[in-house]
Length: 438
Image (cartoon, rainbow, N blue to C red; front, side, top):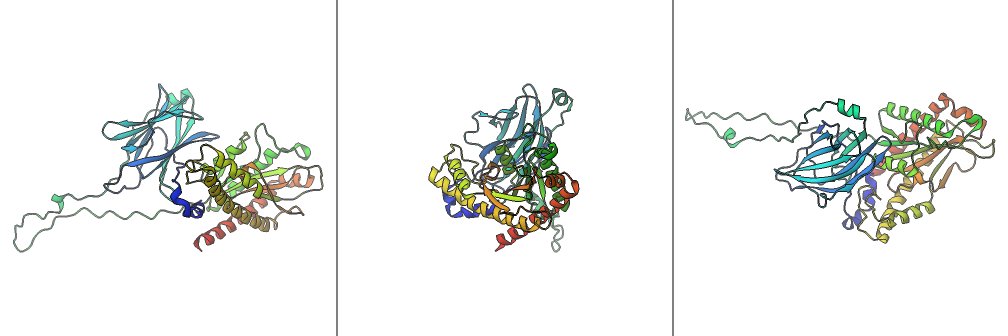
Protein backbone atom coordinates (compact mmCIF):
# COMPACT_ATOMS: atom_id res chain seq x y z
CA UNK A 1 0.00 0.00 0.00
CA UNK A 2 2.79 2.47 -0.80
CA UNK A 3 0.40 5.08 -2.17
CA UNK A 4 -0.96 5.75 1.33
CA UNK A 5 2.43 6.81 2.60
CA UNK A 6 2.72 9.31 -0.22
CA UNK A 7 -0.57 10.91 0.84
CA UNK A 8 0.70 11.72 4.31
CA UNK A 9 4.30 12.53 3.36
CA UNK A 10 3.75 16.19 4.20
CA UNK A 11 2.79 15.22 7.73
CA UNK A 12 5.48 12.56 8.11
CA UNK A 13 7.41 14.62 10.65
CA UNK A 14 4.51 14.25 13.04
CA UNK A 15 4.38 10.49 12.92
CA UNK A 16 6.49 7.45 13.70
CA UNK A 17 6.67 4.48 11.43
CA UNK A 18 4.77 1.40 12.62
CA UNK A 19 5.63 -2.25 12.27
CA UNK A 20 3.57 -4.94 10.73
CA UNK A 21 4.24 -8.63 9.82
CA UNK A 22 7.10 -11.14 9.68
CA UNK A 23 7.25 -14.91 10.44
CA UNK A 24 9.84 -17.60 11.37
CA UNK A 25 9.83 -21.27 10.35
CA UNK A 26 9.53 -24.42 12.47
CA UNK A 27 11.40 -25.08 15.69
CA UNK A 28 14.54 -25.67 13.72
CA UNK A 29 14.29 -22.89 11.18
CA UNK A 30 16.89 -20.21 10.62
CA UNK A 31 16.70 -17.37 8.13
CA UNK A 32 19.62 -15.73 6.39
CA UNK A 33 19.21 -12.00 6.12
CA UNK A 34 20.72 -9.20 4.03
CA UNK A 35 24.28 -8.17 4.81
CA UNK A 36 24.26 -5.37 7.41
CA UNK A 37 26.71 -2.58 6.83
CA UNK A 38 29.80 -2.60 9.07
CA UNK A 39 29.82 -0.49 12.20
CA UNK A 40 26.07 0.06 12.02
CA UNK A 41 24.13 1.37 14.97
CA UNK A 42 22.50 -1.06 17.36
CA UNK A 43 19.35 -2.53 15.86
CA UNK A 44 16.13 -1.65 17.70
CA UNK A 45 12.65 -3.10 17.85
CA UNK A 46 10.22 -0.32 16.93
CA UNK A 47 6.95 -2.13 17.42
CA UNK A 48 5.41 -5.55 18.14
CA UNK A 49 2.01 -6.85 17.16
CA UNK A 50 0.00 -10.05 17.58
CA UNK A 51 -2.62 -11.05 15.02
CA UNK A 52 -5.17 -13.87 14.93
CA UNK A 53 -5.74 -16.03 11.89
CA UNK A 54 -8.15 -18.96 11.56
CA UNK A 55 -5.31 -21.49 11.71
CA UNK A 56 -2.46 -19.70 13.47
CA UNK A 57 -1.30 -16.77 15.60
CA UNK A 58 1.13 -14.27 14.07
CA UNK A 59 3.71 -12.18 15.93
CA UNK A 60 5.31 -9.31 14.00
CA UNK A 61 8.29 -7.20 15.03
CA UNK A 62 9.32 -4.06 13.17
CA UNK A 63 13.08 -3.47 13.27
CA UNK A 64 15.37 -0.63 12.35
CA UNK A 65 17.53 -3.03 10.36
CA UNK A 66 17.79 -6.67 9.28
CA UNK A 67 19.27 -9.18 11.72
CA UNK A 68 20.00 -12.93 11.65
CA UNK A 69 17.81 -15.08 13.89
CA UNK A 70 17.32 -18.65 15.06
CA UNK A 71 13.97 -20.16 16.07
CA UNK A 72 13.43 -23.19 18.31
CA UNK A 73 10.49 -24.84 20.09
CA UNK A 74 10.64 -26.10 23.68
CA UNK A 75 8.48 -27.90 26.20
CA UNK A 76 8.11 -27.78 30.03
CA UNK A 77 6.84 -25.10 29.72
CA UNK A 78 5.74 -24.86 26.10
CA UNK A 79 7.43 -21.93 24.39
CA UNK A 80 8.97 -20.72 21.15
CA UNK A 81 12.38 -19.03 21.45
CA UNK A 82 13.83 -16.60 18.93
CA UNK A 83 17.56 -15.94 19.41
CA UNK A 84 18.83 -12.63 18.05
CA UNK A 85 22.05 -10.61 18.18
CA UNK A 86 22.32 -7.58 20.47
CA UNK A 87 18.99 -5.84 19.87
CA UNK A 88 17.48 -2.90 21.75
CA UNK A 89 13.79 -3.06 22.66
CA UNK A 90 12.73 -0.21 24.99
CA UNK A 91 10.16 -1.63 27.39
CA UNK A 92 10.47 -5.08 25.83
CA UNK A 93 11.48 -6.74 29.09
CA UNK A 94 7.92 -6.19 30.35
CA UNK A 95 5.83 -9.35 30.02
CA UNK A 96 3.26 -8.68 27.31
CA UNK A 97 -0.15 -10.31 27.16
CA UNK A 98 -0.84 -12.71 24.32
CA UNK A 99 -3.79 -13.84 22.26
CA UNK A 100 -4.68 -17.01 20.42
CA UNK A 101 -2.15 -19.74 21.20
CA UNK A 102 0.29 -17.15 22.62
CA UNK A 103 -0.15 -16.86 26.40
CA UNK A 104 2.45 -14.11 26.83
CA UNK A 105 5.81 -13.01 25.42
CA UNK A 106 8.85 -11.15 26.69
CA UNK A 107 12.27 -9.96 25.57
CA UNK A 108 15.52 -10.80 27.35
CA UNK A 109 19.06 -9.52 27.12
CA UNK A 110 21.66 -12.32 27.05
CA UNK A 111 25.29 -12.63 28.06
CA UNK A 112 27.78 -11.93 25.32
CA UNK A 113 25.71 -9.25 23.60
CA UNK A 114 22.84 -11.46 22.48
CA UNK A 115 19.06 -11.10 22.82
CA UNK A 116 16.18 -13.53 23.06
CA UNK A 117 12.44 -13.32 22.42
CA UNK A 118 10.51 -15.88 24.48
CA UNK A 119 6.96 -16.61 23.32
CA UNK A 120 5.08 -18.75 25.86
CA UNK A 121 2.20 -20.79 24.44
CA UNK A 122 -0.84 -22.22 26.18
CA UNK A 123 -0.13 -25.71 24.88
CA UNK A 124 2.06 -27.66 22.46
CA UNK A 125 2.90 -25.55 19.43
CA UNK A 126 4.69 -25.73 16.12
CA UNK A 127 6.27 -22.99 14.03
CA UNK A 128 4.40 -22.73 10.73
CA UNK A 129 6.70 -20.15 9.23
CA UNK A 130 9.35 -17.61 10.17
CA UNK A 131 10.88 -15.01 7.92
CA UNK A 132 11.98 -11.41 7.60
CA UNK A 133 10.49 -8.98 5.10
CA UNK A 134 13.21 -6.60 3.91
CA UNK A 135 12.54 -2.86 3.93
CA UNK A 136 10.21 -1.84 1.11
CA UNK A 137 7.31 0.44 0.26
CA UNK A 138 8.21 2.75 3.14
CA UNK A 139 8.21 -0.01 5.76
CA UNK A 140 11.15 -0.95 7.97
CA UNK A 141 12.28 -4.61 8.04
CA UNK A 142 9.60 -6.80 9.62
CA UNK A 143 10.14 -10.15 11.33
CA UNK A 144 7.17 -12.53 11.17
CA UNK A 145 6.57 -15.59 13.33
CA UNK A 146 3.53 -17.81 12.67
CA UNK A 147 2.66 -20.33 15.41
CA UNK A 148 -0.04 -23.01 15.30
CA UNK A 149 -1.37 -25.57 17.74
CA UNK A 150 -0.30 -29.20 17.60
CA UNK A 151 -1.08 -32.30 19.67
CA UNK A 152 1.13 -33.49 22.54
CA UNK A 153 1.86 -36.66 20.57
CA UNK A 154 2.96 -34.74 17.47
CA UNK A 155 5.01 -32.38 19.61
CA UNK A 156 6.77 -35.28 21.33
CA UNK A 157 7.31 -37.12 18.05
CA UNK A 158 9.02 -34.21 16.33
CA UNK A 159 12.69 -34.92 16.86
CA UNK A 160 14.64 -31.76 17.71
CA UNK A 161 17.04 -30.65 15.01
CA UNK A 162 19.95 -28.44 15.93
CA UNK A 163 19.36 -24.90 14.70
CA UNK A 164 22.18 -23.09 13.03
CA UNK A 165 22.52 -19.36 13.25
CA UNK A 166 22.50 -17.59 9.89
CA UNK A 167 25.15 -14.94 9.69
CA UNK A 168 25.80 -12.27 7.12
CA UNK A 169 29.37 -13.12 6.21
CA UNK A 170 31.08 -10.31 4.38
CA UNK A 171 34.14 -10.96 2.26
CA UNK A 172 37.23 -9.44 3.88
CA UNK A 173 40.95 -9.54 3.13
CA UNK A 174 43.46 -9.47 5.96
CA UNK A 175 46.42 -7.13 5.93
CA UNK A 176 48.80 -10.07 5.59
CA UNK A 177 46.89 -11.27 2.54
CA UNK A 178 47.39 -8.03 0.66
CA UNK A 179 50.97 -7.35 1.85
CA UNK A 180 53.40 -8.30 -0.97
CA UNK A 181 55.82 -11.07 -0.06
CA UNK A 182 59.51 -10.47 0.32
CA UNK A 183 61.11 -9.80 -3.04
CA UNK A 184 63.50 -12.58 -3.91
CA UNK A 185 64.01 -10.96 -7.31
CA UNK A 186 64.62 -7.22 -6.96
CA UNK A 187 63.21 -6.61 -10.43
CA UNK A 188 60.06 -8.81 -10.60
CA UNK A 189 57.92 -8.57 -7.44
CA UNK A 190 55.37 -11.32 -6.77
CA UNK A 191 51.89 -10.13 -5.79
CA UNK A 192 49.85 -12.06 -3.24
CA UNK A 193 46.72 -13.73 -4.59
CA UNK A 194 43.48 -12.11 -3.45
CA UNK A 195 40.22 -13.95 -2.73
CA UNK A 196 37.84 -14.08 -5.70
CA UNK A 197 35.46 -11.12 -5.82
CA UNK A 198 32.03 -11.60 -4.27
CA UNK A 199 29.45 -11.75 -7.08
CA UNK A 200 26.88 -8.97 -6.91
CA UNK A 201 23.55 -9.92 -5.40
CA UNK A 202 20.68 -10.07 -7.83
CA UNK A 203 18.19 -7.23 -7.64
CA UNK A 204 15.10 -8.23 -5.65
CA UNK A 205 12.16 -9.35 -7.75
CA UNK A 206 9.04 -7.25 -7.02
CA UNK A 207 6.38 -9.23 -5.21
CA UNK A 208 3.21 -10.10 -7.04
CA UNK A 209 0.12 -8.23 -5.83
CA UNK A 210 -1.67 -9.91 -2.93
CA UNK A 211 -5.40 -10.47 -3.50
CA UNK A 212 -7.47 -11.50 -0.48
CA UNK A 213 -10.80 -13.09 -1.37
CA UNK A 214 -13.44 -13.26 1.36
CA UNK A 215 -16.20 -15.88 0.97
CA UNK A 216 -19.11 -14.32 2.88
CA UNK A 217 -20.67 -16.01 5.94
CA UNK A 218 -19.72 -19.55 7.02
CA UNK A 219 -20.08 -21.96 9.93
CA UNK A 220 -23.06 -21.14 12.13
CA UNK A 221 -23.85 -18.21 9.82
CA UNK A 222 -25.33 -19.66 6.60
CA UNK A 223 -26.12 -16.25 5.11
CA UNK A 224 -29.11 -16.09 2.80
CA UNK A 225 -31.09 -19.27 2.20
CA UNK A 226 -32.12 -19.46 -1.43
CA UNK A 227 -34.54 -21.30 -3.63
CA UNK A 228 -34.24 -25.03 -3.05
CA UNK A 229 -32.49 -24.56 0.29
CA UNK A 230 -29.19 -23.35 -1.15
CA UNK A 231 -26.96 -21.63 1.44
CA UNK A 232 -25.14 -18.43 0.60
CA UNK A 233 -22.07 -19.62 2.54
CA UNK A 234 -21.66 -22.59 0.16
CA UNK A 235 -22.07 -20.50 -2.99
CA UNK A 236 -19.53 -17.90 -1.86
CA UNK A 237 -16.93 -20.51 -0.87
CA UNK A 238 -17.25 -22.34 -4.19
CA UNK A 239 -16.81 -19.06 -6.09
CA UNK A 240 -13.86 -17.97 -3.93
CA UNK A 241 -12.05 -21.23 -4.63
CA UNK A 242 -12.66 -20.84 -8.38
CA UNK A 243 -11.39 -17.25 -8.38
CA UNK A 244 -8.30 -18.28 -6.40
CA UNK A 245 -7.62 -21.08 -8.88
CA UNK A 246 -7.79 -18.72 -11.85
CA UNK A 247 -5.77 -15.92 -10.25
CA UNK A 248 -2.96 -18.23 -9.14
CA UNK A 249 -3.09 -20.01 -12.48
CA UNK A 250 -2.35 -16.72 -14.22
CA UNK A 251 0.99 -16.53 -12.43
CA UNK A 252 0.47 -12.82 -11.80
CA UNK A 253 -0.93 -12.79 -8.27
CA UNK A 254 -0.64 -14.17 -4.77
CA UNK A 255 -4.03 -15.13 -3.35
CA UNK A 256 -5.36 -15.80 0.12
CA UNK A 257 -8.86 -16.79 1.23
CA UNK A 258 -10.18 -15.56 4.56
CA UNK A 259 -11.68 -19.03 4.92
CA UNK A 260 -11.23 -22.19 2.88
CA UNK A 261 -13.76 -24.30 4.76
CA UNK A 262 -17.12 -23.97 6.48
CA UNK A 263 -16.08 -21.92 9.51
CA UNK A 264 -17.42 -18.76 11.13
CA UNK A 265 -15.16 -15.69 11.03
CA UNK A 266 -16.13 -12.32 12.47
CA UNK A 267 -16.36 -9.43 10.05
CA UNK A 268 -13.55 -7.43 11.66
CA UNK A 269 -11.34 -10.54 11.68
CA UNK A 270 -11.83 -10.89 7.92
CA UNK A 271 -10.48 -7.37 7.45
CA UNK A 272 -7.64 -8.09 9.90
CA UNK A 273 -6.61 -11.16 7.90
CA UNK A 274 -6.41 -9.07 4.74
CA UNK A 275 -4.44 -6.25 6.38
CA UNK A 276 -1.97 -8.64 8.01
CA UNK A 277 -1.44 -10.17 4.57
CA UNK A 278 -0.61 -6.68 3.22
CA UNK A 279 -3.43 -7.12 0.72
CA UNK A 280 -3.35 -4.92 -2.37
CA UNK A 281 -7.02 -5.67 -3.01
CA UNK A 282 -9.81 -7.15 -0.86
CA UNK A 283 -12.87 -8.75 -2.47
CA UNK A 284 -15.81 -9.99 -0.40
CA UNK A 285 -18.19 -12.35 -2.22
CA UNK A 286 -21.91 -12.55 -1.40
CA UNK A 287 -25.25 -13.63 -2.90
CA UNK A 288 -28.23 -11.89 -1.31
CA UNK A 289 -31.90 -12.79 -1.14
CA UNK A 290 -34.93 -10.48 -1.31
CA UNK A 291 -38.70 -10.88 -1.38
CA UNK A 292 -38.99 -10.81 -5.18
CA UNK A 293 -38.13 -13.77 -7.39
CA UNK A 294 -37.94 -11.43 -10.38
CA UNK A 295 -34.94 -9.39 -9.17
CA UNK A 296 -31.71 -10.91 -10.42
CA UNK A 297 -28.24 -9.91 -11.51
CA UNK A 298 -24.83 -8.86 -10.16
CA UNK A 299 -24.01 -5.64 -8.30
CA UNK A 300 -20.92 -4.24 -6.57
CA UNK A 301 -20.73 -2.25 -3.36
CA UNK A 302 -18.01 0.11 -2.17
CA UNK A 303 -17.82 2.11 1.04
CA UNK A 304 -20.10 5.13 1.30
CA UNK A 305 -18.85 8.58 2.31
CA UNK A 306 -21.04 8.58 5.41
CA UNK A 307 -19.76 5.20 6.55
CA UNK A 308 -16.22 6.38 5.87
CA UNK A 309 -16.68 9.38 8.17
CA UNK A 310 -17.96 7.17 10.99
CA UNK A 311 -15.09 4.73 10.58
CA UNK A 312 -12.47 7.49 10.66
CA UNK A 313 -13.99 8.91 13.84
CA UNK A 314 -14.10 5.47 15.45
CA UNK A 315 -10.49 4.64 14.57
CA UNK A 316 -9.30 8.05 15.76
CA UNK A 317 -11.09 7.59 19.09
CA UNK A 318 -9.37 4.28 19.91
CA UNK A 319 -6.73 4.30 22.61
CA UNK A 320 -4.38 2.13 20.60
CA UNK A 321 -4.20 3.42 17.04
CA UNK A 322 -0.88 1.81 16.16
CA UNK A 323 -2.47 -0.24 13.39
CA UNK A 324 -5.08 2.24 12.16
CA UNK A 325 -2.98 2.83 9.03
CA UNK A 326 -0.40 0.44 7.68
CA UNK A 327 3.09 1.87 8.16
CA UNK A 328 2.06 4.68 10.53
CA UNK A 329 1.70 4.94 14.28
CA UNK A 330 -1.05 7.38 15.30
CA UNK A 331 -1.07 6.46 18.98
CA UNK A 332 0.72 9.67 19.97
CA UNK A 333 -1.57 11.95 17.95
CA UNK A 334 -4.67 13.70 19.20
CA UNK A 335 -8.07 12.71 17.82
CA UNK A 336 -8.21 15.60 15.36
CA UNK A 337 -4.83 14.87 13.70
CA UNK A 338 -5.47 11.11 13.68
CA UNK A 339 -8.92 11.59 12.19
CA UNK A 340 -7.56 13.86 9.44
CA UNK A 341 -4.83 11.39 8.47
CA UNK A 342 -7.20 8.43 8.51
CA UNK A 343 -9.70 10.38 6.45
CA UNK A 344 -7.05 11.34 3.87
CA UNK A 345 -6.00 7.74 3.48
CA UNK A 346 -9.56 6.49 3.41
CA UNK A 347 -10.63 8.99 0.73
CA UNK A 348 -7.80 7.82 -1.50
CA UNK A 349 -8.69 4.17 -0.80
CA UNK A 350 -12.35 4.83 -1.60
CA UNK A 351 -11.38 6.39 -4.93
CA UNK A 352 -9.37 3.28 -5.81
CA UNK A 353 -12.25 1.06 -4.71
CA UNK A 354 -14.68 2.99 -6.90
CA UNK A 355 -12.27 2.76 -9.84
CA UNK A 356 -12.13 -1.02 -9.38
CA UNK A 357 -15.93 -1.28 -9.12
CA UNK A 358 -16.43 0.62 -12.37
CA UNK A 359 -13.89 -1.57 -14.15
CA UNK A 360 -15.57 -4.67 -12.74
CA UNK A 361 -18.98 -3.70 -14.05
CA UNK A 362 -17.47 -3.01 -17.47
CA UNK A 363 -15.81 -6.43 -17.69
CA UNK A 364 -18.36 -8.54 -15.80
CA UNK A 365 -21.24 -7.00 -17.72
CA UNK A 366 -19.92 -8.83 -20.80
CA UNK A 367 -20.17 -12.18 -19.00
CA UNK A 368 -23.15 -12.04 -16.63
CA UNK A 369 -26.34 -10.09 -16.12
CA UNK A 370 -26.12 -6.95 -13.98
CA UNK A 371 -29.02 -5.62 -11.93
CA UNK A 372 -30.88 -3.05 -14.06
CA UNK A 373 -30.79 -0.17 -11.59
CA UNK A 374 -27.48 1.23 -10.30
CA UNK A 375 -25.27 -1.88 -10.24
CA UNK A 376 -22.56 0.15 -8.45
CA UNK A 377 -23.84 0.92 -4.98
CA UNK A 378 -22.38 2.30 -1.76
CA UNK A 379 -23.00 1.19 1.81
CA UNK A 380 -21.32 0.87 5.18
CA UNK A 381 -20.43 -2.84 5.14
CA UNK A 382 -17.95 -3.61 7.93
CA UNK A 383 -15.69 -5.58 5.59
CA UNK A 384 -15.18 -2.45 3.46
CA UNK A 385 -14.04 -0.09 6.21
CA UNK A 386 -10.25 -0.66 6.20
CA UNK A 387 -8.82 2.82 5.55
CA UNK A 388 -5.71 1.61 3.74
CA UNK A 389 -6.87 -1.21 1.46
CA UNK A 390 -9.03 -0.95 -1.70
CA UNK A 391 -12.10 -3.12 -1.08
CA UNK A 392 -15.25 -4.14 -2.89
CA UNK A 393 -18.20 -6.37 -2.05
CA UNK A 394 -19.54 -8.35 -5.00
CA UNK A 395 -23.18 -9.44 -4.83
CA UNK A 396 -22.99 -12.20 -7.44
CA UNK A 397 -26.76 -12.60 -7.75
CA UNK A 398 -29.95 -13.14 -5.77
CA UNK A 399 -30.66 -16.52 -4.19
CA UNK A 400 -34.35 -15.59 -4.21
CA UNK A 401 -34.17 -15.83 -8.02
CA UNK A 402 -34.45 -19.40 -9.34
CA UNK A 403 -32.40 -18.41 -12.40
CA UNK A 404 -29.54 -16.90 -10.37
CA UNK A 405 -29.53 -19.92 -8.03
CA UNK A 406 -29.32 -22.25 -11.02
CA UNK A 407 -26.41 -20.31 -12.53
CA UNK A 408 -24.40 -19.83 -9.33
CA UNK A 409 -24.73 -23.55 -8.57
CA UNK A 410 -23.02 -24.48 -11.85
CA UNK A 411 -19.25 -24.67 -12.14
CA UNK A 412 -19.37 -23.42 -15.76
CA UNK A 413 -21.04 -20.16 -14.67
CA UNK A 414 -18.60 -19.70 -11.78
CA UNK A 415 -15.72 -20.23 -14.21
CA UNK A 416 -17.16 -17.57 -16.53
CA UNK A 417 -17.64 -15.17 -13.61
CA UNK A 418 -14.07 -15.87 -12.48
CA UNK A 419 -12.69 -14.99 -15.92
CA UNK A 420 -14.46 -11.66 -15.80
CA UNK A 421 -13.05 -10.94 -12.34
CA UNK A 422 -9.52 -11.84 -13.44
CA UNK A 423 -9.79 -9.47 -16.40
CA UNK A 424 -11.03 -6.77 -14.04
CA UNK A 425 -8.12 -7.31 -11.65
CA UNK A 426 -5.65 -7.25 -14.54
CA UNK A 427 -7.11 -3.96 -15.77
CA UNK A 428 -7.06 -2.44 -12.28
CA UNK A 429 -3.40 -3.22 -11.61
CA UNK A 430 -2.42 -2.09 -15.10
CA UNK A 431 -4.12 1.24 -14.35
CA UNK A 432 -2.55 1.37 -10.86
CA UNK A 433 0.94 0.80 -12.22
CA UNK A 434 0.47 3.62 -14.72
CA UNK A 435 -0.95 5.93 -12.04
CA UNK A 436 2.02 5.30 -9.76
CA UNK A 437 4.53 6.04 -12.52
CA UNK A 438 2.86 9.27 -13.58
